[in-house]
Length: 157
Image (tube, rainbow, N blue to C red; front, top):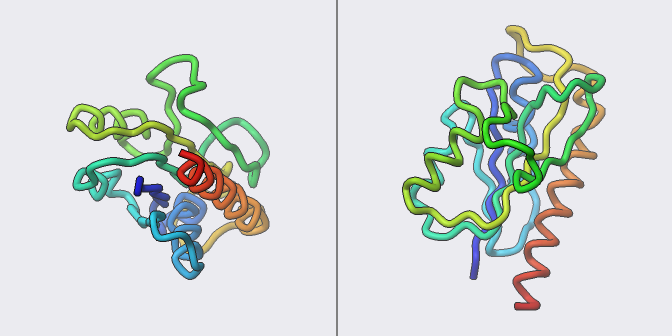
């Protein structure tokens, strides 16, 4: 069975920058299909994915500066981006950088989606701002829709 991997990215010590990790922790508490794995990558980029042989769908959850109001939730399919160096992360390595490393290691990634939340506060502190906290469940629902879509495609193939 193909793998669907959800990766929560971010730094928990910088408030909203850690939103991907907070979402990954909530998703780990849910009962999900066997072929779905939740990873909390923190700031380690995608090192944990290098051991995976085949990734059917990769869902990345992160803080994303897209220019919207704080708390805006984005769904970005990487196949739709107009250019390959689009910066989708607040980290030193962008998501594109990390995916290029994965691809160069011979990993097959057919479908990549980013669920991102516009941060309100990137500063030292634990927890999330009110704007971002209010949108956590919307982001989780979007991740679960992507998981369901990938699993349904598995069943029809």
